[in-house]
Length: 145
Image (cartoon, rainbow, N blue to C red; front, side, top):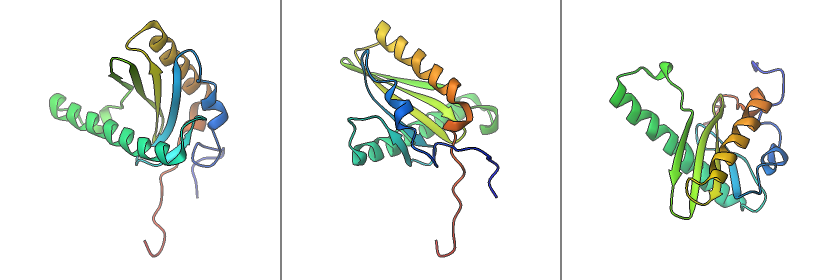
């Protein structure tokens, strides 16, 4: 039985909520599970691209966590990624923790400009506003897998 009594990002389409991030330099966003599954994406990103991005961003978040654990000597349960910034000359991607078992990657035109800060702020507001609805259930193996 599920511990959730409400809809979560893995059971409903959250694309309309993610689409509110578009504009003011934000070119796209992908909501992904911690195991690399694409949960939803903004308009304009093809599904196959969103699936590849989800796997990549999930792997990136896992890599950053592993590296941090090695450097800090912390235990995994003591830490939770907040965000990573990937800054290129023409684009910045913010990878944020969205909820239990989920992350949100947001692409913004420009490099560390005020619009990047605004996009991160808008993303954090969305994450806070939707709260546990952005979480994903643990996937369970079924017979035959």
